[in-house]
Amino acid sequence: MKHSKLAKASAVAFGVAAAAHVAYHGPKDYRRFKELGKAEFIAEQRRNLRNWRPLARSYGFAHAGVTVRDFDASVQWYNRMFSMKLINYMEITGDELAQLDGLYHVPGLTAVKLGFMVGPFGMIELFQFDPALDPQSPDPAEAAQASERETWNRPGYTHICFNVHDLPTWLDKIRGEGLEFVIEPQHSAGTDWVFFRDPDGNLIELMDMHITRLAVQHIGSLVGEILKHTALKSHYRP
Image 1 (spheres, rainbow, N blue to C red):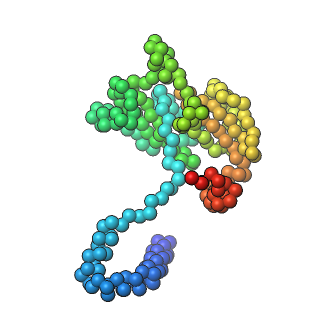
Image 2: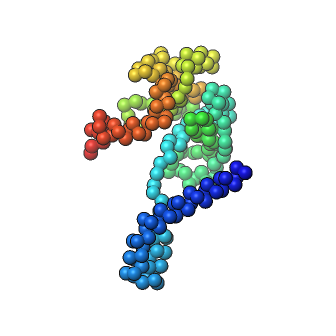
Image 3: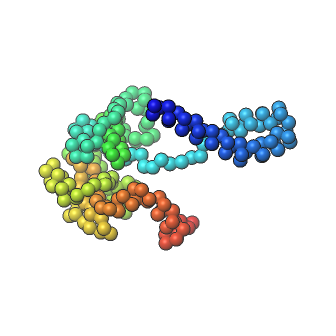
C-alpha cells in the first residue's frame, strides 16, 4: 500500500513538473520550431542535449585525510573514540602507485594503505605510507621532517574538528586514553573547545557549540547568505 501511494505521488510530481516545463518552454520552442523548420529544430535540440550539463553544485564537506603510522590501530582508535566505522579499504602498489608520484612526492614509496571511516558528522580518510617517516630515525633530516607539525601562520591545513556534546566528559575520556591536551579547555563566544593530538600526533579539536550547533546545522547557510550582503559584505569584495 505504501509503495502504491509513493508511486502515485511520484507520478503526480512528474506530471506537475512536465506541465510546468511545457508552460515555460512551450511558446519559446514553438517559435523556434517555426523559425527553423522541423529538421533543423530537431538537430538543434539534439546538439543542446549533447552539450547539456547539470548545474555544478556542492553537497557540503566530504572528508579530511589523516596520515597514521598503523592503519589498523588507528581504525580501532577512531572507532573507540568517535564511534566511526570503516566502510572501505584498499592498498595501492606497483604501477598504480607510480601514477600517483606527482601527488604523494615520497621517494622510494612502495605501498599506501587507505580507507574511509564514516561517522554521524561525515568522513575521514586514513592513510598509511610505506615507508613512513620515523621521528626516531638516525637521519637528522628525516627525524626533523617527521617531527614537524602544523605551522599556523603558514598557508595550509592545520587540524580537524569534531562537534561534541558535554566537553567535560570528553576530557575525562581523552585523559583515559593517556593523551595530553595542547592547551587547557577554552570558552569563547558561547562555545567550549579544546585541542589534543591523536596517537600519531595529528591535531584534533573538540568543540561543543551547545544550542548554536542546531542553528548552524539547520539555518547556517541562510544566515551566511544574509551576512554576505550585510554585516560581512566587506569580506566578499575583490
